[in-house]
Image 1 (tube, rainbow, N blue to C red):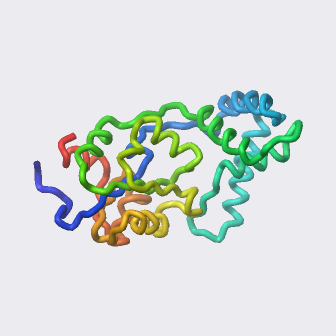
Image 2: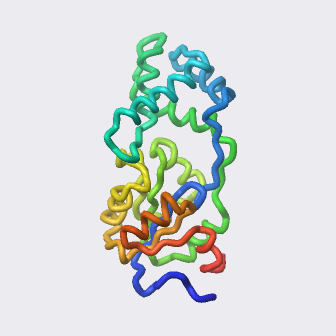
Amino acid sequence: MSQAPVDFTRVRAVLFDCYDTLLDISTDERGLCGYQTLSTWAAYQGVRIAPEDLRDEYRQRIAGMMAQSTEAHPEVRVEEIFAGICRDYAAWPLDETILGVLFARSFRASTVRRLGAFPRSRRLLSALYGYPLGIVSNGQRVFSEVELRMFGLSPFFRTVVFSSDVGCKKPDNRIFQVALRRIGVEPEEALFIGDSMTNDIIPARRLGMQAIPIREAWPLFSV
C-alpha cells in the first residue's frame, strides 16, 4: 500500500457521506414525467391534484419553508411537505401523516432515474471491519434509510444521521457533531470519507477530523 494520507493511529471511527459516496444516484425532480405517475398514484389515495400543480406545490412549499428558516443551511422534512399537500387536496377524509410518508416514498420512486451501491464502496466497508462506522448525509430519512436497507448497507453502520433529522444540512457543523456524539469519539479521532469538498472534506477538516475523498479511499484500501 502506498503512503497513506491518513494517520490511522489516531482513527477510532470512520464516518461516511451517503450519496455519490456509498450510493450512486440520479434523480429528476424538475421534469413532469415523475409527477404524472405520482399524480395518478395520489388519486388512488384520495388526493386529487394535477401533475403540474403537484410539481409546483412541492417546489414552492419547500422554497417557502427554506426562506422562512433562520438556518444558514436549512433542511425540511419532505413527508411534512407532502402531508400538507394531502390535507389541502384531499378528495375525502384521510390520514395525512401516514399518507405523507407514503407520498414521499412514492415521490422518490417516481423521480429516481438511477440508483445503486458502488461495489468499491461496499468492499471498503468490509475492509474497515473493526471500526465503528457512521453516516452523515444530506438526505431524507423517510426514503434514504430505505435505500440503505435496499442495498444491504444498513448493518455496517452504528449510527446514521440525515439532515432531515437535524433541520440543517452539511456543511453545517452540527450535523457532523451529532454523529460524533452518537458514535462516541472526538473529531480528531474520526476519519470522514465523502465526495464533496464543500460539504464533506472541508467542513470535516475544519472540525478537526481527518478527511479524504471517496475516490482516494478506494485505492488506499485496495478495493
